[in-house]
Length: 312
Image 1 (tube, rainbow, N blue to C red):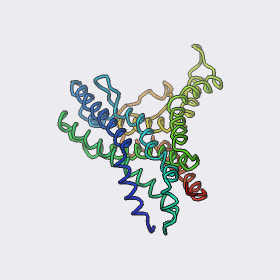
Image 2 (cartoon, rainbow, N blue to C red):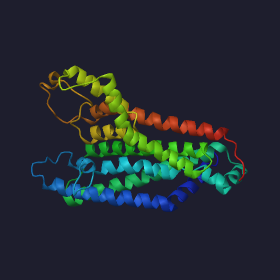
Image 3 (tube, helix red, strand yellow):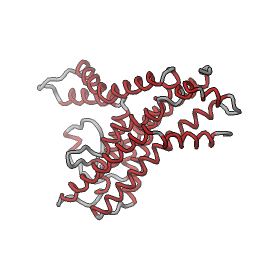
């Protein structure tokens, strides 16, 4: 596509030079690495912990009073995506540079495609850099070199993290197209993030209690229906999708999400699943995360193509 590469490189340079991006990245890097370092210390003290998949435990284990690296990505990832996209369009329009760019022989779709791809590339580079440093911690402090299976699982975890942040980036870009002011698009993005990250748990619980009210005397089948409905509603949150994907990829013994009956547990041997089997477990969550990102960007694309751009 003519003109895409210059726009992509220009946006990539702007992203890496942004002070707010460097600030949030610094927070994620410091907290994530420190969390992994303390987690490696805690894992190293476990005398009976098998070395198998020890590298993957660095991403999900907490230590030194700090949450896990997965928590930091789940919490700060949306903020990073919002920072990259909340003023992507209305910021350019306010500064008067958008109409100037469109006066050049550049297609509209090149602009939004370049901005989105540059944001995703920025996120991918940042997350990949942190994961490589965590691998260095694993080798230096634990003396454990990840095997091929662990590397493939870590790569899929990396893809899931990028898709997770990509959803929030495309959502922030959409709000930057719809709203004239950058402050409004930022507030709307943050409000939706707070709703999907926190309030969705309360709403899912209330709806499940109304549809399948349970008591201490409730039978297991009713409890299972209650929990299944609650889990289904929680999956409207991208954070829950990322959590389930990460748990299945980084803990190969996970076979299913949600309640299980005692009859299903009889004779079950908790041997680690192969990579292909783990992917089958979380394939619906992966597809949902991909679809959410694509749909959000598609709406942003159509809105921008139809948006009337005036010089300010």
